[in-house]
Image (cartoon, rainbow, N blue to C red):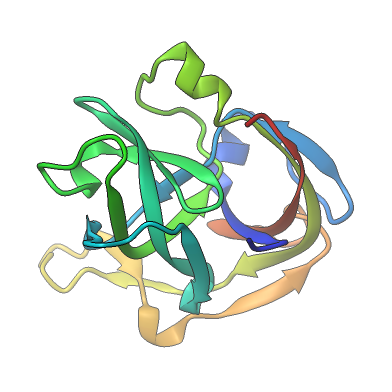
Length: 183
């Protein structure tokens, strides 16, 4: 498995009371969340968990479904992460494998999961590097009012920083090693 994970950390999470982070720091977090722009698909015949870094600090994964409820799902691709049930195929169940491109990050809150499942999501992290996401935002092409804004993926840009308070931007990527994890 990977020795370092790219964990997205949003400015709004910091603004909502969580601390800024700095290179060299270690911290504990209650869960890692995942998201997928186009959802995940059933990985027919898969029996191995994989995670390969792809562009924009995301991952191409094959993951085992560890938990599914009406609202939440936990997948394991070498790291356990929780996300919306809607990101998995409709007929997906515990033990199935799914595949696709995902981002992972540190959530402020998650949909309810069983306490014993929540305990498997806890982890401790060591920050090796931090990338500030300086990608500009543009008006969404389907919004004539210009109020809905999205990242301009044609101009993705990151800058290495020593801490999340050294450059104020909408999000950061904490390049972290697992210090320890509750498994």
